[in-house]
Image (cartoon, rainbow, N blue to C red; front, side, top):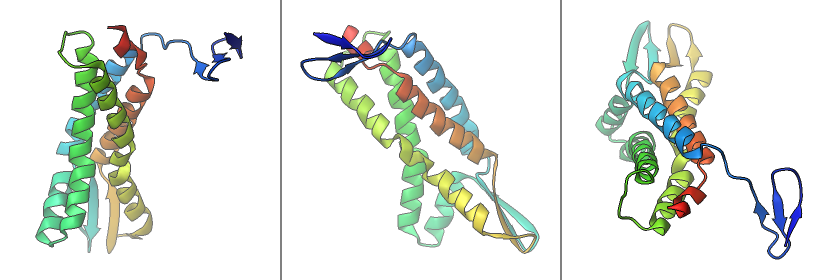
Length: 182
């Protein structure tokens, strides 16, 4: 029924599906990564994500202040995109992953299919949170006129990028077969 391809993987001769060995301590490591990401989300929201120097005056702004300033300039679409990609999606990811992981240890009345759907949704939206970091990196690399006009990423940019990366690793590391083991 199965052909041995290498030491860890098997290929089913009937459906050609690769059957992989289970990831050891998948739930624990994914939960630990998610908790670390939650801890990084706090400085990502509190500290400045971007430092703009205009004619020698340094102006720092957090993600939320950036959204508010775009609203003040009546750039509603950009404000919506930044708010969604930088605040809503990471919050959905963090709460969703934490809920799925803890629901496997605490008895929660939710179907396994719904947990799998939730996990796949979180995995699909995961990379869209990096849009903020791309914008800051792009602006910082393009706009460099020393003290006249300069843009740099703040400490929140590092925290935010690490938070997104940790949630992506947590989702990737999680073995969804654990959900079906209940």
